[in-house]
Image (cartoon, rainbow, N blue to C red; front, top):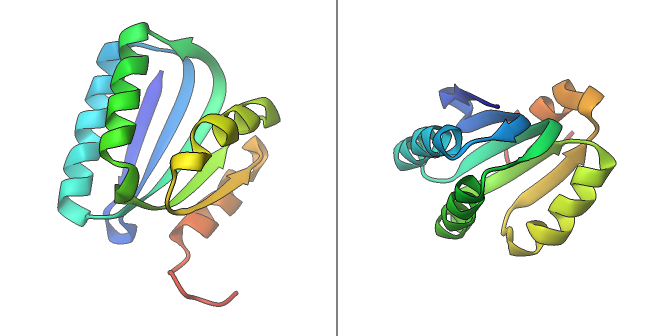
Length: 124
């Protein structure tokens, strides 16, 4: 299951991942995100991972290709997840990210949104 929400004024998207992700679901979401990137250039992403059970082999392969194609299109990423997912994400994805990344617990979604939307260069 994937849900996707755009915040045009902040050049940000929110993606919620749960259950098992099919190739069709991933491709629909990726198409929307690619159109969003085309409109805004570098974008911000909030990724919320709940009860993730994996993805189809096709979805995984499409995710890898999408990620490699768009590594430089993100300027801030917030990840809300369990510690196990956070550790996996940090080991597999973080080394390739060239942007600000912050991790939050699942019950810290509002804090993650606040951090994601905070203007670049602003002081707390």
